[in-house]
Amino acid sequence: MSNIYGDWLRAQREAAGLTQQELATATVMTRSHIAHIEAGRRLPSKEDARRLDKALNTGNVLSSFLPDDDTAVAEYFQSALQLEQQATMIREFALSFVPGILQTEGYARAVLGTSFPPVSEEECDRRLVTRLERAKILADPVTPVVWVLLDEAVLHRVVGGPRVMAEQIDHLVCLAESRRIQVHVVPFTLGLHPLLNNMLTLMWFEDQPPMAYGEGLYMGRIHDSPSVVQELQHRYDFALANALPRSETLTLLRATAKGYLDHD
View: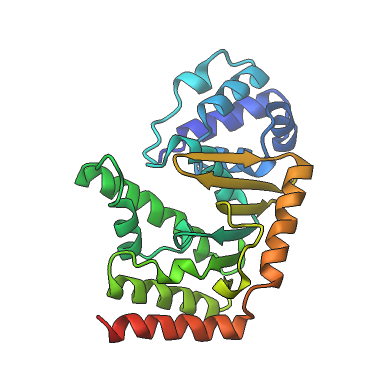
């Protein structure tokens, strides 16, 4: 996108004699998010833009001239998406589907195609582009560090057909073998465990406390209360401690992918 918006924000911040950190503190944002906006890599939410206007005494300029964001995600996920792009470490637990940042095109298209009520093919394509754009955070070989816990059900719920499943699981294996991600399967034999309620994303940042995001049917919530985040971290740690080791996980993933191809 054009960086006129980011350049203007930087000029106003500097004219006010504020550092990025000082502006971030005044607007309840992170320094890295301010830096991303100024560099043209991110757009603020409408609420962020209003806080920027207030902190910089710029009337409603930053709110009124906020560029259109073509990102096609559910409204409840928008804030979580911004945090995902800023995180230095992400730990995912998936109960039903492979996490969005790890989905292949075929798998993502199948997931997005199950919307109800149905959406147009054009809207499905817009959502697919957004989903695949999210995965680009893995292009950096180091940051964010990504740990993934998959409930074994994710491997057996057929999404898009056997070939799509085999391709998706092979993608996870490749990422794990390259050491780009750590992946572990929580086996059925564990039975009940503290993460069975819904999916969970834990995020750590360079310049702010860790946060958590939980999602259910048509709803999602960001948790920033230290006590709540800590409890969710403990739940994740429990499931991780009882998950299959890396070598056993990779063996299971390879065998499952082969099974899909053999029965295609």
